[in-house]
Image (cartoon, rainbow, N blue to C red; front, side):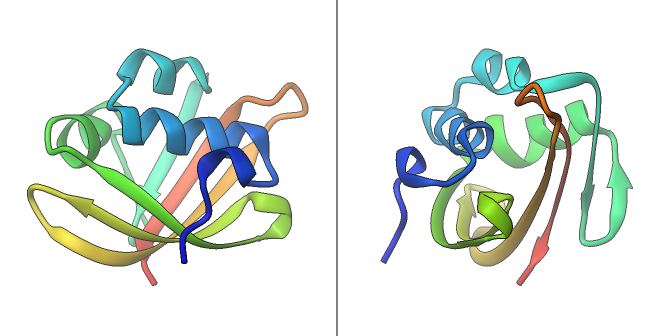
Length: 108
């Protein structure tokens, strides 16, 4: 069973999932603070290079299976054209103003 982005507890995280699944890079970037950071499997990555490679240039798609921590931690069936489908964990730091300042992902 998947959770639709509009049903996620944190609106910024829901908008993040919506932007990924719509392949809307402008909407995605609008959700991030100017100094946003990210990590993949515990290693910090160049955010713009990573999102191009892993999301926007490879047809990334998130099927949210579970949320916790007020919607800021997700278990996701993630797929893209490079890696196929895998079970991943995502964690988000959201500012009081509703912007994402950091996200971390990795295999779950």
